[in-house]
Image 1: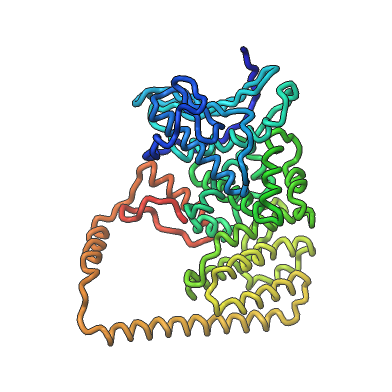
Image 2: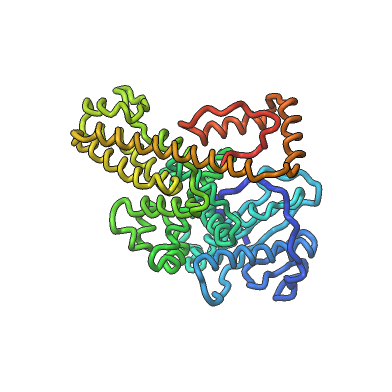
Length: 468
């Protein structure tokens, strides 16, 4: 029987170190399985190739991925298996792995579809990589189970944002996601716009560097979680998953079909997405910024964006507000809006005493938009005085705490002596790292630090990690 291939688009994550597999003896090979084949407990996955332990492990991981997807949408009951997903294992331990160790393939003839996932086991398969491809296959399966092969002349496609978003939403549900990633993206206004997120293709995602992939995954996860939290969002998402792989129109149209609340306004989806990013990035009150950090954030926020006739954007502080008078109303609004958005984002983490000041700054900016500026100089001067008083009180509080600690401490504890000696030794041996990894991380640091003060060149004692 020959099968005709259907073009599909699959998004893959980079290969990671294979994790220790769960117990494979939880999977049986007698559930209608052929010799050398393992069938998962759900009956949806049939694994061939490799040894018995590898087949059992992959069947178990496949069922776990399926259950994670079902848990997100609160799917109840067991559906009948119409089209099993075949998992084909190849490669012996130690063999060089192909560029894409895990791929999905879809074939069909006049009678049936054939959905396969191929995994090369030569260097191990990363669990998250395998789960991402399986998630894509599960979405295809939901769409194809109700279709006839002779109706499949059009192209099928599962968008990368959906796969990455579902995996990130699962990580958040299992408390394995990092809130700081959401906070970092939200504070900087995000990297993607909604139409950009929808337009990312599989090949484009594979070309992303690590930082951009992280931003793409977090942005996608926030969108998926925003949809799931809509009124009747779980039911709507289940229906959405049965249609998305075969849909060829504009994605916002399909989303509004299954999530009616998004029809309230043209920008409803954007607003829900931004709110989700803010909620996931919001820290508890104990993690609020200090006075000094709030001041730094406010200085960065209170900047106008002036655009020259050539389209070049120049930032100017709020003290240059009178230059707004030369702009047309639309241009003036565009120049002020970045400051308003930045103050709004800062309010989620600012030192609590600053929140009334942030509200007043928003009122002043609104007056500037309307060019009702009679009281603007007076209000700006009053706000600056309040900030100066806040800074003075903060410094006094720190001085008091330092005095209290010094006067109450009778003898040095010596607890930090080893740490201080280590710090001194590292400072003595300080040198600049010029290896490719350090240079790459410095570039990523610049990407995530736009508009902030320049940071020193990475040195030996600085940890090799991406900025939060």
